[in-house]
Length: 115
Length: 110
Image (tube, rainbow over all chains, first blue to last red; front, side, top):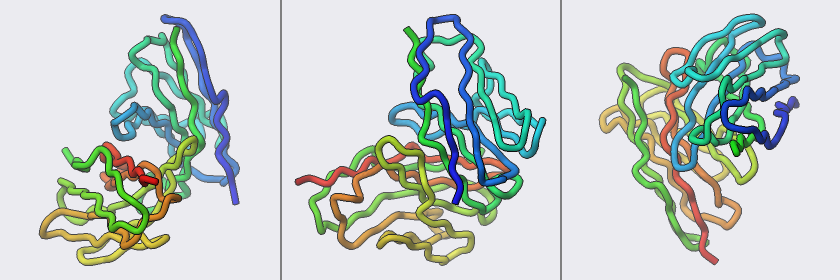
């Protein structure tokens, strides 16, 4: 079996600061995703990538950048952290190109705290 | 656009009670429908999925039947246990994305 590792588990930064979350997967999956999870709401897609160096915007991409420099890793940058975007960020991967019936495997999440 | 609606934000039951969590969707055609479960401190994990009208998905005692007529995929379990405490998400595949419901937190009362 494989695993998705998200670092750090807690990311604390100041308002206006640029902050980066990292995700590694050893499934050898093609597609990777970043979701934001707010309390009481569903998961919202920020970015996804179907292969190395590919980036596709989700519904919530404004205020974020992403980078897929190699197949196994996918990073997400909050370009200017704001207190109203404190949430849990979830990384996921899937075998197929897009979640076309294939399972998404998730990491444990990274919690963003803005002080 | 496509959407998924879960009407219950939270459900509180006692052990051995019957569980129903409602999921209705809005989409054209026959989208693949999913149920995911998220335990505290973990990411969501797939319970099961279904892709055709009247198809039943099941896992760990949970089940749901794809109903195109009522655009529903309600999650049921005959007898819940304390270990079922979690947040349950209904989702559908739309193009290359998953559209998620808002989640239902299942609380098992002692």
